[in-house]
Image 1 (cartoon, helix red, strand yellow):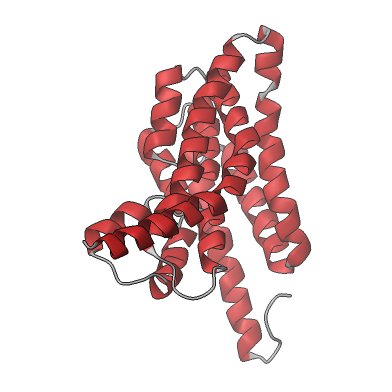
Image 2 (tube, one colour):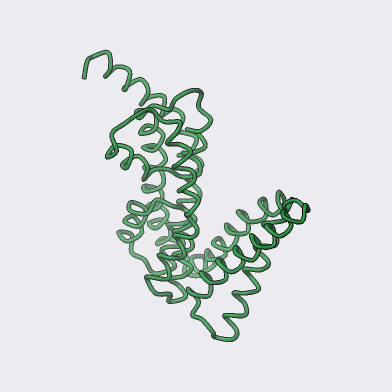
Length: 242
């Protein structure tokens, strides 16, 4: 690679780091809280950091903690997090059209770092997105998430036992915080949430399914039903859910 090309890559990488600083700052409280919750769930600091290193997906990691607390099996946890993260297929496909041409192994490497936030920064960038820029953004986001997850666990160890146990409320608060804004924007999300909650309640109280499978099946059933209803409405000329 020529000096000119190296200089360009270096410049794009620095721009990516600058663009990723805001993501790193935004991840700080969420990662700290994740570390605290991981501590109360029973994970060691090494397990907490390893999860953030290998998974790097906030919502999925939070859900995993909840399922681990309930004693859910590994396969059910994997399937649940797959459903939660299925949107990443669409984000990756969209970003692939915007990124500069690159070797497949390199794309596979930086695709690991695609989150809602890194995708937004890259998608809103003018013109083609360079590989150097993406690695810069992802480096800031990834390092913040991993380091602060471990820091949260360490801090959690010094907190009073009662306060550590009360931190589990933050898990539900985060899910409510994610759900409510979406419900305000679309009636479809309201129907999805109500149906999924109803199915999961039925499965839980009737013991038809274990907790993990109850969540998976409730999610899939509600999604299928809402899409079928929406399809029928479109055929009748009634439009889609607002």
